[in-house]
Length: 238
Ligand SMILES: C[S@@+](CC[C@H](N)C(=O)[O-])C[C@H]1O[C@@H](n2cnc3c(N)ncnc32)[C@H](O)[C@@H]1O
Image (cartoon, rainbow, N blue to C red; front, side, top):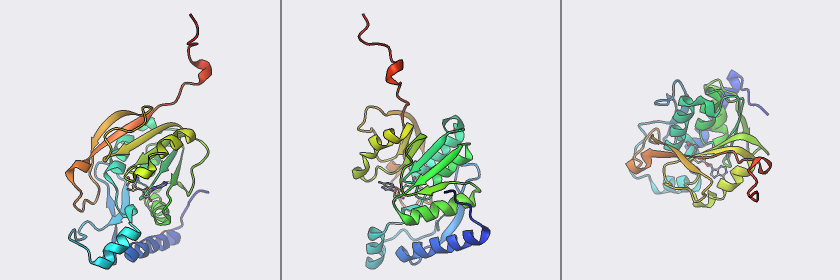
């Protein structure tokens, strides 16, 4: 199902996203901002002047309980967006999935770079709402889903391996996609030899509320299309 929001729907969705952000962070505001180095992409994100000091105990508990990851554009998503916008041949004309979409940054960049279709998947309903809001903000049509489609040309994962329990997604991805691109600032090497590093990009989480500099280097890994068995050279031929 595609998500075409009317102006009224969009305003209501923005207000609902603001309400959900305040359920975790009562003092925070969602503000539409241009992403640095991403030619015109705008996202509604947490206000950049949000205080970086320690949070009151009950707010900290709410953050742990329900982190609003979607209110930030993570360095890996920003780096992957820049990579796709600068190298649109990766997505042009392709069916693309953004797994762990958060704000929707990678999927929106893929759509802007010429993807034929984009499906954004996230387990967090607030992230799915944020992706819908941000797709509309950029005039892009994304399908928003809780589950992966059976098949796509290219699957994107940006900053989803922060939770090591998600490492099995590396092999799940290859069952759903011809090719996979993983962007990550926390993992230097992927524990799957099918993935090769193809780019290293400087990109910090935006807005940056004090993340360590070591997380401002994003590595992009590619798992290429596998050669169909029938077209491989016959290894038994002598
Ligand atoms: C750190 S945020 C990154 C968001 C976005 N890709 C970016 O780079 O800004 C990780 C996102 O992945 C989602 N996520 C975590 N585990 C997931 C899973 N197993 N399947 C789908 N989404 C997942 C979270 O809900 C969150 O929105």
